[in-house]
Length: 131
Image (tube, rainbow, N blue to C red; front, side, top):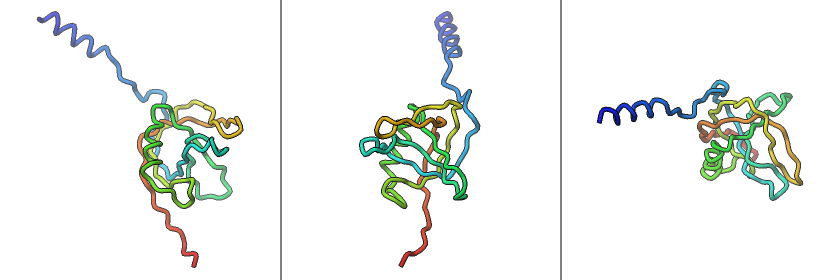
């Protein structure tokens, strides 16, 4: 019995869980998320940071395959705002340090950084009255 217990303890401590090694620091940022619109000549699901400076270059990321379900769930749960193709969110993520291709319509591809999404929550935008 002791041999079995010793074997099980040795086995348990030798198993490793996926660790966040190789990931950058965890960040929380305002962003917009986009659904897969490749069939209508758009791009796959992706994230674009909400940068308030209109002169700055937009920063977009593609989620890892393992965190894509988090993005897809947020796309299903959060109503589009302010346009029909984007959703305003607050996202917690870490960069993986890898460059990946984002597939878009007509077979085009864009290179962008990959992120591991930790969580996504709805962000309310306050738009001025237009009447």
